[in-house]
Image (cartoon, rainbow, N blue to C red; front, top):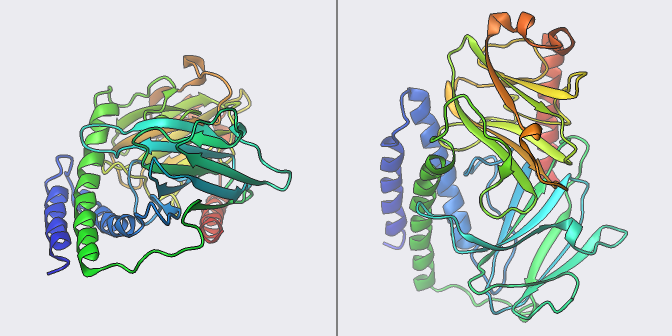
Length: 389
């Protein structure tokens, strides 16, 4: 049967989910099966999007096929490459806060992070007054050529990230890719043998995806003391202009984790929560993430995020949505300088009932139920517009 290898992989994947060591509750398991559904969808999508001769940008991760603690403020795209061919990327810069490009050599796996031979943002390229640009990626030396990136040996993928800070005000751009020597021709129709290989490849992708992103937090998060956050550090994986502060939390319903951080001069700054499946929580219908534009800064120039299960009636409440354990990450992007400990967060654990007495500027941060509902409605509307953009 043509699809049998993929069917076998799904059965093995279900066992990986059911045997995950962090599962404690029915919610954990149900979310695992939902994560599995998105991973099945993504693996088929990735296998059929794998074309290095007639490439196109595919969505790498998104709200319905999450992975790798996906940033709620980011649109992720990728295209597959050969290191001996030339590719032309054309686009129009939108008004989002950041647009970055990264060439990868190899794949993420349970054992290693792929090499990143090149990573840069749009400040490094020439963009016309109307926002349009053209980039070339190829095997020849750049030799001073603007908007040309030499592909290192083993280069296999181009990843692009477009990052929002104000969901409702910023507009995404346009992006396309073509291989220079195949443009104007067409690929041959697939054979049954080739389709069988794609199903088998999709199965391998599925299993690798689940194993990799269950292992990843062990490297970078779970060896840290619980309910703490690190100093800002360059994000692993080669992103040239992103710093992050990471940690994991474990809280009961009567305690809030108050994360205090200076409002940054970086164009993008955001905090998010993630489940133990290493994916974002529901950021459309709940405020489980906040950017510096979405949050309300205090008069002293600091943002105080209040992470809790109980509603504290505050503008910067970050909802746990029933997750008593999970991940916290702060990102700074498009930075123009090195981030230091002074730019980073401090953490306090405060009983929810004591927030009025212990949280600075508590009165200024109060929000009514009606205004809170309006904030959630604005998130839902902005997200819908972004997905259609």
